[in-house]
Length: 209
Image (cartoon, rainbow, N blue to C red; front, side, top):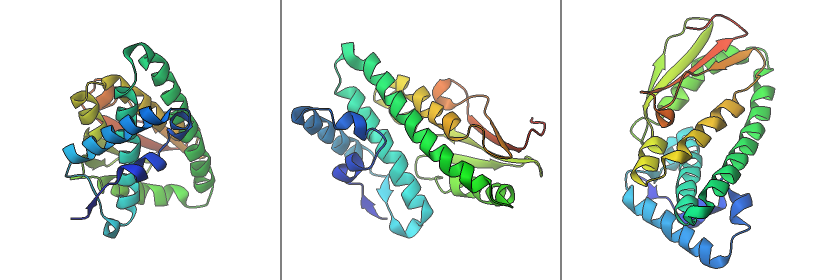
């Protein structure tokens, strides 16, 4: 079944370290305690190295998710709006770094065909781990998948911080912006009030659905 996530690892490897570095020790202790509680409250989320790429994907996603909730829950109500803006900036910066890497990858010959074959399958590895992902047939000009269950959406709601959702959705838009030969289109997400997150990628500027 795999071992449970470890809070110190999650707090060491996430996109909010620029914020964490500025915090006093007593706040960091409370954040660590909050992450520990989230790990205990979600026993189905476990680290399993045998899952290959899915392990690294889930560890990265859950580290950001748990840290974001812990940061927000330990902030004073008066400081949450400012913190939300700081967290958004951290995710935008992370999205830009990911975008640079994706731009290099998509510049290779045959990159679109490889992405069309692999991306929906990799995302579907999250099924049963808090996600429900279904690949969508977009024909030869595109590829995509729908997300109808998402741990971000569920845990933000359960922990009383749904306002965190849209900044994580913003990350996807930054990460997928202006890629060579690939256009990203999404009409909505669970975190912004839609019934699904519809990820669609289209070759060049081909017509979308």
